[in-house]
Length: 250
Length: 334
Image (cartoon, rainbow over all chains, first blue to last red; front, side):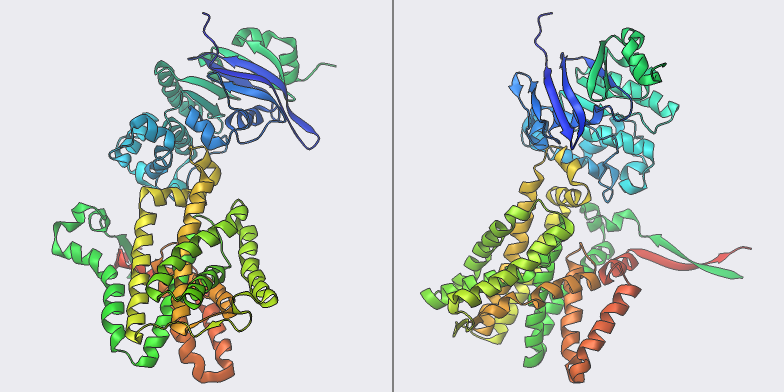
């Protein structure tokens, strides 16, 4: 019970020009937890991810991961601590075949360190990873150039790229957006399996129904501020949250 | 009866570069043939040419090396318009070592290759974060700046340059040195880009932020690529210096920057063999056109335009595709 948090975000702020994208946001995350972050468009969710993963330097505030202050560290270093992310707009390596996309994270210093230098056949590991995220085993699609893959596969590939890094904390930025209900339903078990493996996960989502089914806790952002945090049902009862999502009634 | 052309890719088996490909002589030959062409062509046939054409081929190979070096940079998404920076730096380092300390070409060339690579990398390091046209502008400006610096401060011989440097023992030696270097560069770079390391390089070109989030320091990788490219360029410069027995301001000339780009466009980028092929077309062509006098540039330019419009992917990509495909006419039913 007295477990110290895995990730502590303390009063993180960032403004772009005159827009306060993230405003004094603080939250904590325990190991093994699944935290959902929701909020209307432009509420600062993705910026928050960028701040935590080092893609954007915060104006003020602190990010502490496993007792280490990682604020403002470059993204590749953040990965080496064990935090991996996916991008909302998928970023595959379009010129490379799907499974070759995974060679890049498999070459990272983090994976080399965890595996102990030798990786044997990286291609085989890559194909295994693709199977884990729902590419059919030995399917032609695994060998196709990423630019020819449909959106559903690109999202899975994006997920596989982050899992390949063997992260302890996984940040999924709108993994479900642009997917059909059936596709979402097929990805949810993958996430549940990751949880069983003991991964801590932050999910940014617009698909509330699917998120609430798997999230332990939900945090709501609006105009860069944290407006609510707690269990899914509690949060949706919150007056401010209703206002943010449905608009005020006056 | 209507007919249409059907194109089929050859089976993966013969195309893969794994052990499977070695299961029959036919397949071995299929893989070996395209690789044997540059090796046999350069090493066995060029010595039979006349002294004049040997000279042309030497300068062709120098441009081909610069083109390969350019192609290495473009693989990581670095657009360079300043191959003459690498050439000039390499040329001045080799020239100075030979002129002031009397080092033999046997040592000046390797020294200039490594030192030139380091110096050029250090000069471009601050702008390595820039992308596309911004990086290109800096590479274009740097050699021009150095050119004026030499002129204004009169260092390293000033406008006169360093003259009377040691030549190669014979033209044949020079021919072999540059051709072996070119083949080493070609196959070495192709090997690198085909490895997992090369995959990271290509991925940086594709999407650098995704490589960052894969836990890799892209700036460090770009620095390494820059060093590789710059070293090969500096080697070309050091070689050229001893060939001309002169190191001077022409080393920074625009020719050395533009020709590699033109070669890569004609030959096909990203394959190393393409830019080399491009140089082997453009440089001799420019020699042949010399007979036309002033009109030479007109025809040369015309050739370039026609080529780029007709075959924008580049000659090598086209040839490679054709080599890996069967073609046959099949009947179309109405």
